[in-house]
Length: 158
Image 1 (spheres, rainbow, N blue to C red):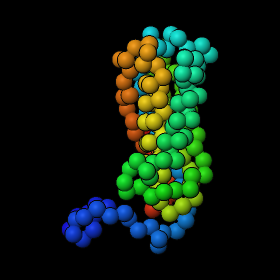
Image 2 (tube, one colour):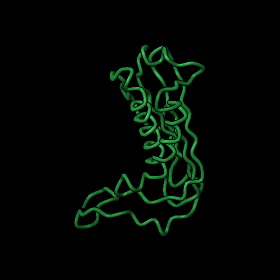
Image 3 (cartoon, rainbow, N blue to C red):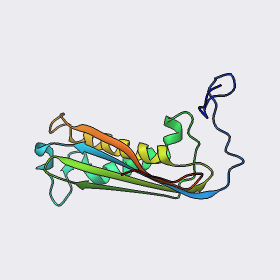
């Protein structure tokens, strides 16, 4: 028998039953770094770039929030969740790179790690889409879970 929680006794996929879990406050924080390159970042003024498609970071934040809310539609075994809050921050960290942080909070029976990871990915993909007319050498580099609180265990990665 498998140790994977998303497989039943016959090794077929299943959605984990969380009905016996207690409702607790749960948060997750994910981070992505993205190489934009000097050519793209040089177009920014006051930490924002306005393209023909609109303000890049503001639009990307909205897209990331939408991605968080749609995670269960994108990832088959994720439970639909009532999201209490999403906070996405984007900052330029040097002349070529940015950092995206997504924090998701709920009161529920299952964690929000996948929602936070989806949020940073969709934010980065939107930035790519909005800046690709400048150049297409951008790279979404590191995407990872930084922190998870609530439920059985807390995790903090450096």
